[in-house]
Image (cartoon, rainbow, N blue to C red; front, side, top):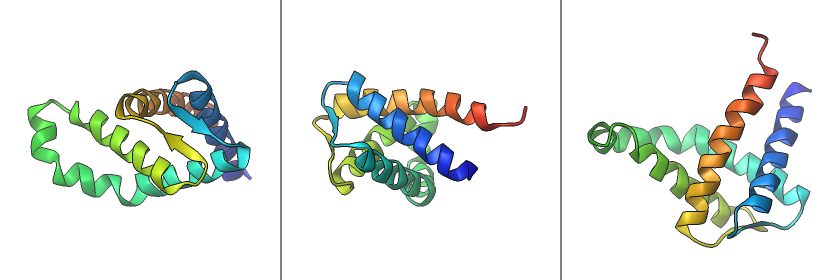
Length: 113
């Protein structure tokens, strides 16, 4: 049950980001649910490999290159999920940054601390 509520929360966050950031559009709530699932799968399977491959660049940039990776993966999610569209890199960068910040808040709500 908690996993489903977290999924719905992330879908609402994605809809909020689409509302706030110009250049990001979500067709409807079901599309936001699909986009949340796609982003979660990308973060589990693809992101760790990319972080490992780009480790030297991450060390040189003191970890700031991770923001670029997040934006590119956010754009990739927009490419995969139907109805979830991202127009340009700047929109993806701002959207990924907002998603990271808001997901920290969303994850802290569900913790037992």
